[in-house]
Image (tube, rainbow, N blue to C red; front, top):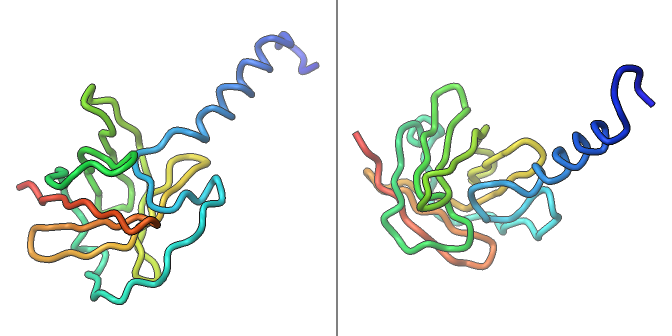
Length: 135
């Protein structure tokens, strides 16, 4: 055993770490659980800088999609994933025409499109939702 730590404390930390792998805000294609990757989008996507800002979901809720997202210039962010206002810290990036959300040991990938103040995210099942940029 690790000196100075009880067996129950070590087990508790390991269980908490394992459970944190299942927390996230969106469900495009789940990178951590090995869901299929999305096909390359044929739509024209915007540069990463077009995603920076506060986004509020206006479209229908699709499984585990974020209610709100604050995407920061340094590629970090916060999202709210429920009506109770609970959220999570995230890292995000755009690569190969896809938007990636990464939460600790789990992550999600979406096809995306930005048109004016509207962001559309589409998951691996072809379901889409829209967000509006807030000032």
